[in-house]
Amino acid sequence: MKNDEKKPGRRSRAVAAKRAAILEAALTFFSQYGIHGTSLDKVAERADVSKTNLLYYYPSKEVLYIAVLKEILDVWLAPLRALRHDQDPLTAIRKYIRLKLEVSRDHPQASRLFCLEMLQGAPLLKGELAGDLKALVDEKAAIIEQWIVEGRLAGVQPQHLFFLLWATTQHYADFASQVEAITGQTLSDPEFFEQTLENVQRMIIEGIRVR
Amino acid sequence: MKNDEKKPGRRSRAVAAKRAAILEAALTFFSQYGIHGTSLDKVAERADVSKTNLLYYYPSKEVLYIAVLKEILDVWLAPLRALRHDQDPLTAIRKYIRLKLEVSRDHPQASRLFCLEMLQGAPLLKGELAGDLKALVDEKAAIIEQWIVEGRLAGVQPQHLFFLLWATTQHYADFASQVEAITGQTLSDPEFFEQTLENVQRMIIEGIRVR
DNA sequence: GTCTATATGCCGATAGAC
DNA sequence: GTCTATCGGCATATAGAC
Image (cartoon, rainbow over all chains, first blue to last red; front, side):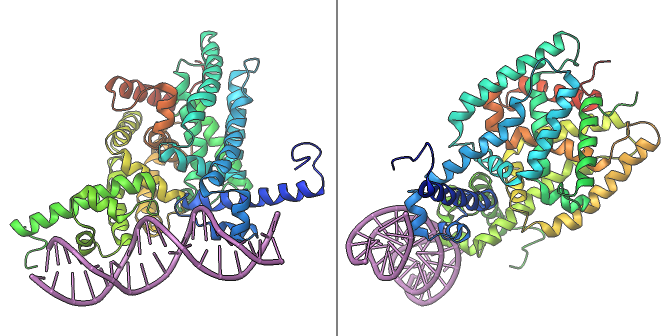
C-alpha cells in the first residue's frame, strides 16, 4: 500500500506479476469468445489463481474486461503515432504497413479483441474513440493531406486511406483462420510474412493497374 | 408434412414465415452479441414467438446459430461468384468492389456475424471454409492469374488481392462504429456511399503513388 | 403446434474464517 | 491476501397438458 506506484518492492512486484498474468489470461479468452463466452473460472485457471483471488484483484468481470481493453488500445495505436510529416510519404506508409502487420503477427489477440469490441458498437470504447482516437486520426490525416497538397501523394481522402490500411493489415490477424484455410500459412512463418508484406505494400502503393 | 418442400400450401408457408422471422431475429442478436451473449428469450421476443415454440422449430441454440450462418454465407459469397474471365479486369474488379460494398451497406449484420465467427477460429464454418470457399477462391484466383499473365493486371498474388478487397469493403460494416466515430457518417447515406466507393476503387486500382 | 411449469446446470459475486 | 462454502440469478432445454 505504501509504495504501490513508485519503487515497487518485492510485495508489489509480486502483485503486479499476478495482475499481469490475469490480464494476459483474460485477453486470451476474451479475444476468442468475447466477454459473455468467457467464464472467470477459465481465466483464473489459466492465470493460475483462484477465482476468488481473481475477484480480489478485479472486483468484477466488467472491470477486468475494461482493463484488458485499455491495455490493447495502446498497442493498436502505436504504429499510427509513429507517422510524422518529415518523412518521405511512401517510405512512411510502407513502414506503417510493416509495423501494423507486425502487430497482427505478434499481438493477434489484441487485434481480435479490438475487432470484437467494434462489432458490438464499441460500447465500452466509445469514449476513447470519440476522444483520443479521433484527435489522433485528425492529426495524422492532416499530415496525409499536406503530402497530397505538396503533390507527393495521390489525391485520396485520408480517412479512407486509413481505413484501407487498417482493414488490410488487421485482416491477417482477425481472419487468420480464413487466411490459413485459403493459403495454408500463417504470419508466424517468416517467409509468408515477408511475402504478405511485399504484396500489401505493392498493392497499396502501386495499385493493380498495368503501367 | 406432406409438402414441406415443394408447392408450399398455406400451412407450410406460415411455417416458413415463422422460421424466417426467427432467423432474422437471431441474426440481429447473434451478429452483435455473439452466440453466448444472446439469450433465446430475446430472440423469441423479437421474432414474436414463445421461447418454447422457438425450440420447437430449432431444437437447440447451436442448431439455430448454424442455420443463421449457412444463410449468410451465401450472401457473403454472391459477389465473388459474379467474377468471370470474359470481363475487362478493371471493370470487373470495380464492380466487385461495388457489390461487396453494397453488401456492407444492406447486410451489415451478416458481415458482422461472419467476422465474429472468423475471430473465434470459425469452429462451425471450418468445413465450409476448407471446402466450398477454398474451391471457389481457387477458381476465381485462376481468373486473376490469367489476367496477369495476359498483361491486363499488375502482378500480385491473387489471394492477397482477395484479402485486400474483402478486408477493405467489409471494414465499413464490421467497424461501422469506428467509421462513424471518425467520419460522422454511414454507408446508408447515399453521398457517403458513393464517396467511399470512389475512394476505395481508386486506391485499389491506381494506388497512392503520384504519376 | 403451442402452451405452462419446471428441471438442471452454470456462473458471477459475496460471506466469513484464517 | 487467500481460502472454502454458498447464495442467487439466469438461461437452455424438457415434460406434459391441451
